[in-house]
Image 1 (cartoon, rainbow, N blue to C red):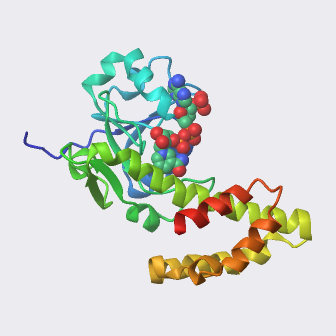
Image 2: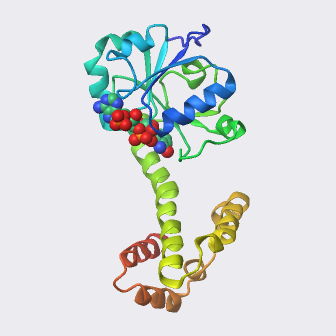
Length: 236
Ligand SMILES: NC(=O)c1ccc[n+]([C@@H]2O[C@H](COP(=O)([O-])OP(=O)(O)OC[C@H]3O[C@@H](n4cnc5c(N)ncnc54)[C@H](OP(=O)(O)O)[C@@H]3O)[C@@H](O)[C@H]2O)c1
């Protein structure tokens, strides 16, 4: 099938008012793109009223709500529907996963522009879905999405859990302000950026089994002891 880029300037529809929706609205505003929004809190009762002039609607809803939402409003299928979940595979919408975390604060437009969108191989290319966006994109086999997303969750979310644990325990147990650890976090990030997998230091990479055993003993009774042990096993 020939994939034709969308060349009209119909506004982009945005369903949902969560984190990703708020960031996309900020980004689209910076790019000067026209968009229409709908959410169940603030939109008209019928989302089609909000999206009547849109050619594409981004379904920025919780993963579990996406199929039910489209099934509840079947006339939406006349639009090009795109969800941004990294793991959901569904026939009701195409997918374009932004490889990024969307927190409470907005980012610089240059960062938004660099966010890669991951689409399914053989599906509509990203430049045809959202030709207005300058972002890079990559395609992966649809059946690999689950593995891809699990890697993203581990890298982004699990590392956040570990840093949050350090910040929390520094303050609660040792009375050390959490920002004291920021130079450590900054350098870990910088080393990863410059050296990739070779950035790892510490007892695992040194094969220092004595320190690993001592760390595990020190973590006795701590819910993260099992996490440390699992990392040590996975690394081995
Ligand atoms: N957050 C990230 O870092 C990130 C990164 C990449 C991709 N994504 C993907 O982006 C999508 C949106 O994620 P998010 O982080 O923005 O989620 P979120 O902050 O939890 O927002 C979810 C949105 O879905 C709405 N919603 C939930 N159930 C609904 C229903 N039954 N009918 C209508 N609206 C409903 C919520 O409305 P209420 O507030 O009224 O419940 C809210 O507007 C998801 O597919 C997610 O996997 C997220």
